[in-house]
Length: 63
Image 1 (cartoon, one colour):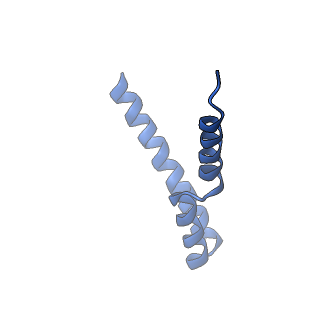
Image 2 (cartoon, rainbow, N blue to C red):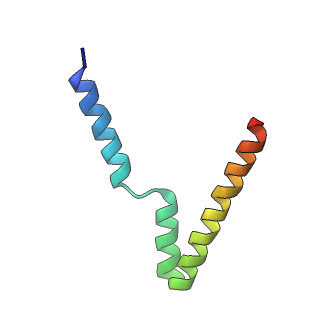
């Protein structure tokens, strides 16, 4: 039997996490406001590169 109160709590938590900006979003917006479009774009490129590096390191460790 499905526990509907638990299911509702789960869906509420997922919606809360999807609806609030994360730290990277706040960083990109802050850089864009302070330095303009190019600074925001550079921040996006940097955070994506950092994510790829972390994924690669994780993959190497798991191997």
